[in-house]
Image (tube, rainbow, N blue to C red):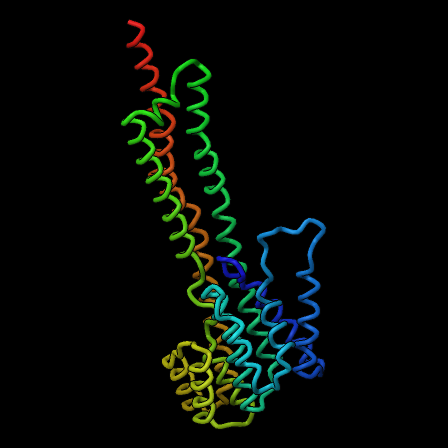
Length: 322
């Protein structure tokens, strides 16, 4: 639906716009309708549309909510239904938004401030994703160049008068070279994809538990009631609760005799900073790790597909002239 790569930037942008509209006093239904109209303009066909392009997840979610005409309490379910086929990380980001909406609706708490913090967290993780894409650009360009070299080698040999095509496609040795070269290139492609997946942020919703309880408490509820509301929302949205993080902050709040909401928000921000730092570290290491499949798979594939058939053709031609 939204492509194979998650786009946290889209989720962050819509969340930020939603927070601004709600803080300005726009009704939830009207806010989602305005967002759907703005997203439809962004997804309007260009003069030269790409036939394989797909609408962004922001348009998918905003349009689904706007079309449903659901009340505030039912919007959570509409968001969850619209994100079922999205990449896991992007779906988790939308589910986090749905959980925020659910908790604020039940607790009667203001949502705009929490959405701003959530959008900021998503934006920082999206920056880490872009760092990973930048790290991938140079090795990917090198791999494409090296993948073209076998064809250049075969054509170069044919231009010199050697029968490299016959050697590669009509002899057992050539068939073996094709099989080994194709296997190496396939292994390199899978290795690259695995490295890129490993460099993605671990979670799109770091610190969400703390943020949700802070929202619920700000609505005037007690901590036990807030935790019950948050646990139910996380279960509804298919997100995993991390009780240990919340328990430590709540215990500190009780021991110090201070309100838990600010401590919970501070802890959520710290967890977001830690997640951002880890994602940036993985993105920085990605450019080095991607040289491994290039050196161990792509370059040997070039030797097998481009150099060995040329050498065999040269030797065969030389022997046949004696």
